[in-house]
Length: 293
Image 1 (cartoon, helix red, strand yellow):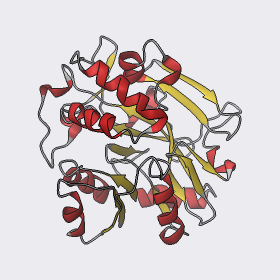
Image 2 (tube, helix red, strand yellow):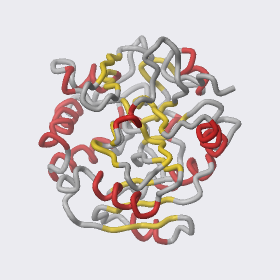
Image 3 (cartoon, one colour):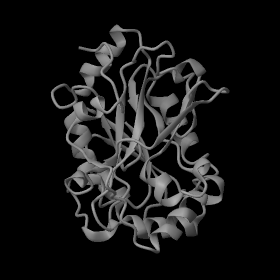
């Protein structure tokens, strides 16, 4: 696994446990100037390699350059999962099969990349109504999501799908939907040192890696990334990132968050769906087991 982070000490215990339980056997982190003990905590973990930089997140193309270099150096020939600290990978049969069962099947099927949809999870009530504690499963209370309200189009330049919508679009970008965050990601790749992420994990080069969908009416196997962004820590994190101005498009996303959070919003609505398991997500059409039986 590869991940960049900054000041995420409270999230790390559960994050590491979740992915160790899935079968990740080594973690590569880039710590971008943490001041809360994140670096020391990671350095004490036996299955973690931690790299440290105080350089600008924006100047590294939002961490992409750092991870591309590490992947070129260390990931060649390995299945590589690239996620943010608040993203939790869900795939078909993840409740009974380790991630190696998925990658073995992908190898046998000559598939080199695996697509997901980012699914924003949120609590019922104000975002800060429950205090998140280190080691806690965030989905004990942030277990609601939008089952619909998504748009999808094809990126003609890179061939990847571009998905937008969900609670962030309706709560923070309701007056400017085309600026809403992208929900499409390709986090799992059988890495080759000639590959590179172009923009976050939304798209890769060579372009063929972006074809994680079927254009002819069938379904390719796919998953979801459960996005545990909306915890009580989000308000402070949003204010910090807005002040740092290290995010895409002059941090317009965090400007929208900061303005919306001033009203202490409740993202839950009458169409919100309570998360049960991956099979529910498949029934709703948000992921697919395809022909993996």
